[in-house]
Image (cartoon, rainbow, N blue to C red; front, side, top):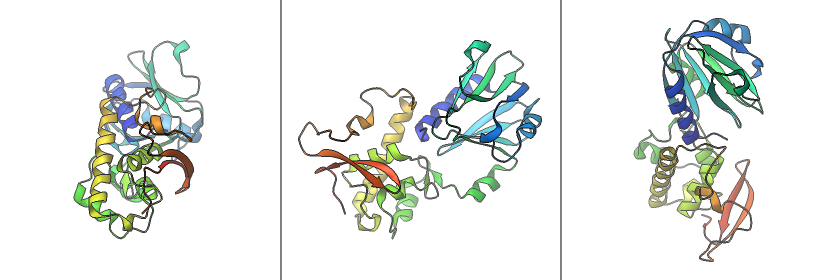
Length: 262
């Protein structure tokens, strides 16, 4: 599913295609993913408006409107956006679409309907209401280490908790644990200061590299980070074999013999 780097890719795409264009018409084909207003209300609020900018926090993309309000795009497991002009290029599972005066369209594609779209009048109030943590690439190391202090969670659960830090999902959490050689079921309170520092540094490096390579969850290259992330995979140096289990409610891969349980 789209995590912080993938949403950053969507943000760049949105900015390159859809800013500063007047929305002539909005069509909603399935309003289930629009969470806080009706489909009709969504249409009425957005027709005639102009997208003026974007911001991102973790896995959430916020699009600024010319009236000071925002549209939240949370892509769920299978959400995507497509900019196109010809009707035959319409995404197969398009749930709503913005028609611009230019003749182009921006469609929101979501096969499994797990996306969450919200119309937001006050972004600061909204972020406070949902308790979303600081972005994983914006949080300082000092604040990150402070959040880890005394936590009884396992490290996988800590990394996935969007109220602590926003943006890390299942795949990147496994990669962070793999690169730090920490078993994902390890208790945060059992980790040394040096290990906590390493978790922060690896998280920052992994997410940054993924952004630099314009990560997209539908088309990762073969040599992407988690090439190791399949059960039975043996490290080339023979130091571990990959197994899978459930940790923090998520399917988790780890390398037995390489990652240490603390």
